[in-house]
Length: 484
Image 1: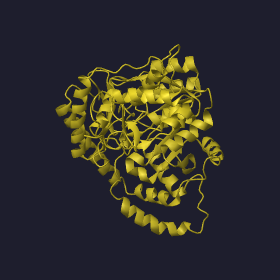
Image 2: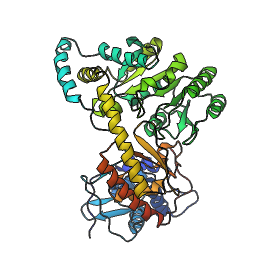
Image 3: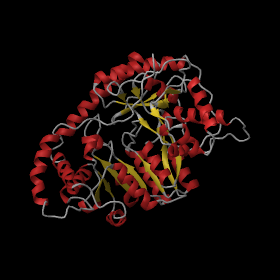
Image 4: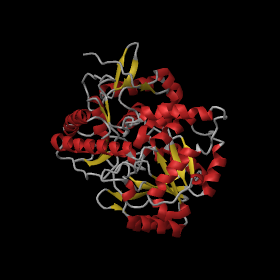
């Protein structure tokens, strides 16, 4: 059977050259072999997804400043190893490792099950909220539409929720952003610059690591044990030894482990930050997805212990809908003022209509969020049941909230499994994506944000992929690699 043409996307010659970095092995004369090994490593690390179309030989040769003969030889080796498939007139694309001598059949877009993103669909009640917001919009049409701080009605309702949870807040301590990641980047750029150290949990949210690298700051990892949680003593030592300019914590249903810090731990962590005078970004993106009750009945926000050093970010993406693209920052009025002054260099505020929609959703007495929690609880149980059935050797701790399981694999194969799973129609993020310097090959994050039948089918396919990986020896990779 002839390989099918992929539809995943294309990487340009210049972009691939950046990803490859310094791909030549020191003292090596085998340029083609080095290049093939470097491309293989990008595939195994998940940075060249299955189906990615590669640049033409001439374009890549120009970008790497090498001969077309070398490029052709490297592609021949990758094709022989099953990592690249080609068709005359269609070019070449990433196929699948461990597929030596096999035809590569890519799953259709309709059949692909995406477990790389932990994003549920829109919350019930969104359409009525849109209708109500449409009427409220009339009162704003006479304005210029720029609200760099955000609409007051939305800020008041977010502040009210913080107060209910034990962190007294007024509207002037809240700024609306275009999602929590936008909020994170805003604070990061204001407080840290090139060469500054940023303390992070290990594992942690991959996009936070990407943002830190993009700011040319240096992430300093502190291990987070999936069984015992945060090592406060280790955090205290890291604060003393590395003197970070900023720290980043997810204390509520940590992504990816699902852990939640207790009140005693929050108080100890806040004391450590205070002694070191280190401000902290506290990510509460998942706080409303408490599967054991209302978050207002849980431990107080970490910001309640951290005082002015705590800068809390939140989002409607997980609790309501990512399509709203709204988040917020809760901080002291002084910090909010500085953020507003710095924001003009990036954007001029968030969309008015979406803010009105979210304000309506936050004024329903919590009914919609209660329904969201019930749905997430049922899906969590469905995913754990599927794993117990299809992957009984995988272990995990059932989280009290959030949207994902952090699964321990029977052997270090997370990246190889992620690549193999794509060949079975499942997209997952390997454990290496959640580490500062990769690694975490015994771990895999699995979200429970899809319907139960899709979760069962995804886990069934993962079980098949895992069996194929366990039966195939790991492909050798270069010892040296560029970490970005």
